[in-house]
Length: 282
Ligand code: SAM
Image (cartoon, rainbow, N blue to C red; front, side, top):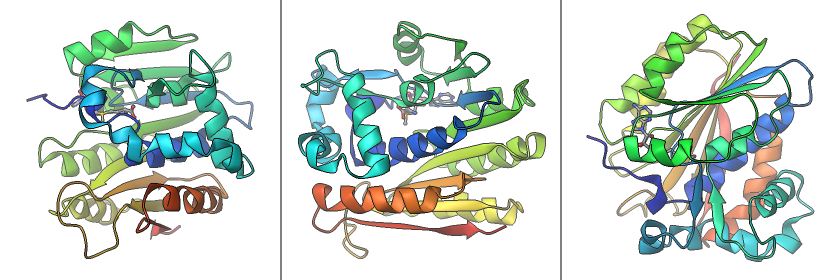
């Protein structure tokens, strides 16, 4: 069953939280010269025109990236958020008009250097066709296949460093545990990998299965970052928050992300809140 299509949700509050976190991690990794392999296990289409039929059905970006775009002049003084917004301008065919929202392959691959590599997995045939049709520059491969299996099968990588984003749609309940298993297998083969895992905060609370399995699996250095649109206790229906685990986070990511999300939260909802903490310490 593959019915999820990210185009319906492109640029929503969860994308902002996820891609800001990814941006903060990548900025830090690219400070050092040694090459990095970037793996995106659930890549999606790569680029989302906001006028597309699917995206204009729900207009979720109006409670996500759009308020930030409209306030971008006043947000440029915030280091991580300002840099992220400047990159977002680069993704637009017309720099003054927000017409496209770039997905994780773009945020990951936009500054690949010689020696860096990017592997993009996408299982949905239609979504993969969109992705493969993107003008990708550099050592980038798109693979039509299962990202969790593909990730573990390709380890260890040839570059000295590895950065992985695991961003499933969680259409199946078992995915929470499967993601934890793939994360443990990845760290078994590549102990120093920086791995980002996105999860939704939903009333059913299934993300606890993922978090508990990671803790029980003995992984160390796991940073947890959660952004809620609604105050705890008012999570009536649907996705009320976005969560990320970052294993082996770069030094200072917590402060940079807290500062950026502190500026994002009030623009998206009066009740929005951000929290970061160690899920498992060193
Ligand atoms: N990472 C993207 C971004 O941030 O722009 C969004 C990805 S979306 C949440 C999840 C994607 O995973 C969908 O495009 C879906 O078709 C794809 N997918 C679902 N199961 C998959 C699997 N087992 N392996 C690879 N891709 C899968």
